[in-house]
Amino acid sequence: MNKETVEREARELHCGGLHCAESVLAAVLKEAGAECGAAPRIATAFGGGVGRSHEEMCGALAGGLMALGCLHGRSKPGVNWDEIAELAAEFRLRFRELYGSTRCSEILHALGPQTDMDQCKRLSGVTAGLLAAVLEEDGRARETGRCSCQGS
Image (cartoon, rainbow, N blue to C red; front, side):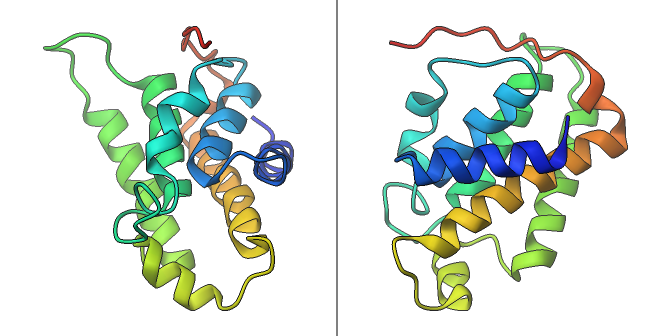
């Protein structure tokens, strides 16, 4: 998975009308070769800290976690999920180190004034690249994604 490519794709999707969660999920899946037409629908409710509340987890982080689950999550009960839990924790930790929080309102405050959500668009790209780096370091970026969902 190419970090720069996925960053650019997430920014472009966000600039094209998707929000933070939708753009990160769609960009990571596309770069992993596991595009999912339903990705925006799956992520829609997570935009703006869940339903634009700005009170919960940053949508870009949520989109990355959804992509991680889609690509490497378990598909049935009883399957060990220790490895993906470790990846998710590492991704969240690095995000928090970079932005000082995982909470949308706190991140928005730290980013300062925005014009046309420019700071959030940049954050979406950086977050997608951050997930790509975590996957690359773990060796999973080279694994073929297995997400196969249909959108309408």
